[in-house]
Image 1: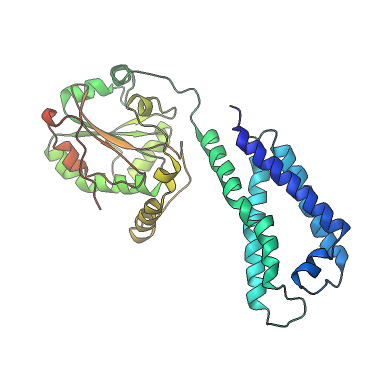
Image 2: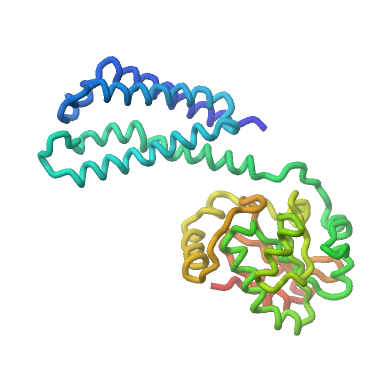
Amino acid sequence: MAAPVWMSRVLLAAATYNLLWGGWVVLRPLDLFHWTGADEPLYPAIWQCVGMIVGVYGVGYAIAARDPLRHWPIVLVGLLGKLLGPVGFLAHSFLMAEGTTGRLPFSWGWVIVTNDLIWWVPFAAILYQTARHHLAPAGTRSLRLADANRQIRDQHGESIESLSRSQDCLLVFLRHSGCTFCREALDDLRKQRPELERRGVRPILVHMADEPSGRDFFATYGLEDWSRVSDPDCTLYRAYGLGRGRIGQLLGPAVWWRGFRAAILAGHAVGPPVGDGFQMPGTFLLRDGKVIAEYRHKTAADRPDYCDLANRTPAASHEVATPRP
């Protein structure tokens, strides 16, 4: 897959800026100090070394512009420098006493704006799109829903269709095991298990890890005896119309707040992602191989009430369950 053209343009612009700025500082190291009113450095050659380093970054950005998806580590290192630069400037400005020799004036902040701040958003956007690219499952098959239900089987070799003919099935599509919302969902299912069993509903857990990893992960919630489907290629996710989330669905303000509550306050924590971190979850109630009710997450932080969804009837086909707070 070729990177979007805008990525290369951003990196070429950054390369041009860095090479020009670095060359200027090397050739005329005192200009910025005169313009901002800062004290001249005791050893201008050290400041010229800074210009040399900035210029070398420009060479790196020019290389990365040829294939941003491949050379993303250069962008990551650049962004880290652009994040830490303003931190160092602010710490220096506030911690050094007024009038201290060598203290940078706040007018030096204009250098921070052009060198660092204006690049935060485009560099972060490049890394975000790169992560989406590299985490996407490879070779996803395209199956119709009915075919997927017949072909895809749980750990015991039973198809989803056959399981749903013996009793109602609650097909729960999870995100990656490191996701705090995935862990919260499993804890909710553990707590609601007696009620689901009383209603005769059989949950089927769909995940993106391999079978042994899925079994061990679900065992921590006492759910290792439930039917589970390992779907690392996300074939079943796609058959049920569950796609990859947009940035607002995955990293919006409400998601961050709910994530804090789930991970820190509720103690579900987070872990390394196993599978596509951009995949959206969802839950479907099946009867005789057909969907009779569903819950499609609008954000990764949505929290369905599984017992409420399990209580739906065919007349309520494709209704959604009430989200929990």
